[in-house]
Image (tube, rainbow, N blue to C red; front, side, top):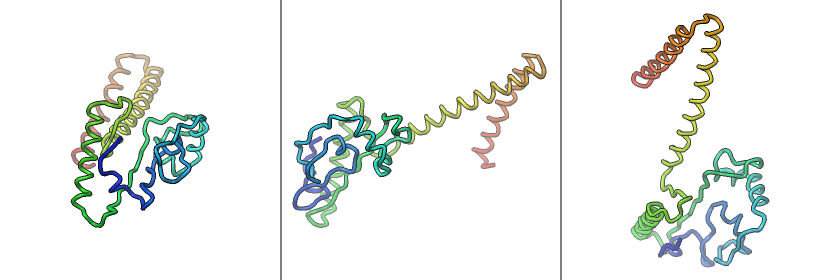
Length: 185
């Protein structure tokens, strides 16, 4: 990703830009704190992932399922810090931010990297977490309803009464959710 003007607004000092706040430097280690572009990929990727799993600071940049036993993550977060090194020229900083957003949007829109979703805000993360919670809750609700239906069938021995009772449970939950959502009960 080559964005014109980045070196004018990156967070750093006279020696150059500081590295990104990301897990990427773990995989492309540098001899200096400043990335030079000559870094190569580490050979022991699993060992590097285990190192990340032992760092609480780095775990905050991954999803909640990443651990020493599960070295896969669906989400990684990178933070790029900017600094107006030429003074307080906010107009140029804002112009740079808009160009950065346009560049990232076009990369995502054109699917240049199909396995990467670039998110300017956290709407994508909210959707992922909501879908995960909905899937989890649906499975537990289905299991609970199945267990209740089984217990009812053992007691009454009538499929019709079990179906009527299950329908009553489902309708009571949906009406309770309706009242809670619309009237905050």
